[in-house]
Image (cartoon, rainbow over all chains, first blue to last red; front, side):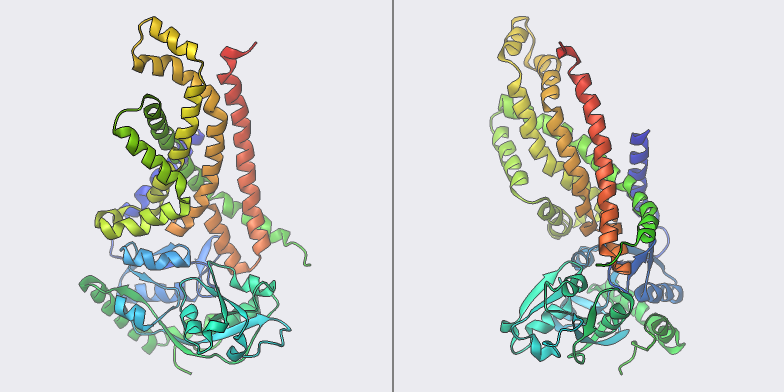
Length: 251
Length: 224
């Protein structure tokens, strides 16, 4: 009984990916672990990115299929053609632009230092000298920290997940993430955290596609859909729902 | 110190339970395949076919010598760069492949030891009545070796069940992946990981019961 049950589930898992190839679909990768952009509650994938991609799919006439995996696996999955794009606040950087075809930015934000509540010693990005700082593995914030003139004096620690938790526990002095999710995280989570100073760098987040003819064609189609959503106010509406402010335009 | 959010944990139980089938399916399929492969490898290690033996030694050395996570990344993200056709395998298949090869290497050694543990007189007796090497293996040696190897093989299966928690890095949402995503949304890390830990624990405990019964059955012929 157990055997037939498990093998049934296995067959379903293997067939599941093959059977839906019929309709035109966009395979979107996300971590599912980046509140409030992409997260899960009671097994329900949701967040800002999910709402944006659902709206894009509707306008572009594409069936959106979500694939969740750890953040560091996402770029590998895009490169090996297992997904078509990543909706996980991917910041446009020169290195990534050389490799991928980016859509227009749909979130404009800044890098933010966050510390444990009551930490008087770190008040801005300059105070990170001589401190330990957590960033998500493979994220753009690691790069931003390396670009600081005093990067050598910062103990940069890369994490697969749970950077907020380790900062709250005092295992690291601070973490760096985008401003909007930092604000949201401090508001919604029970963790004792606070912002340290103003955002220190503008970041533009977009959807990366494979830099191939097919990928670029898909990118153009998504770009057009984003234009429509920007013009009819849908992007602003989704942003207001999750953040109470419009993060889809430059401040 | 804050109090545990029991309501949240209770609500999470059915969510995590719904991922038990995919975890068991991956572990179960890997176990069947790994057992078959490991038996072949072990028999080869005992009879030592020229040339092939060197390859088997190399295989076992590599898959015992590198971490499972490294092997999974190598198959899933690395190999498709060399062989584009491999981009079509999905995460479940890649995880099963990885678990199978990794654990077959370990199991081969424990089966080999079990074969070596069968008393020499059994080989001689089988030879004396004119059995071929294949007959001897299949009818005399392997059944007795199975009894010796059973406890360690069940141990590997338990390890395999827990090893499936790495499949989330390949995009397969199994029990651990589901718990990680829930924790990201609720920030209740302790609750989420405690629920998933207890469910793994119960699963392995149930398996230990099966192991007890399996051992009694395999030992029947030897009971005094």
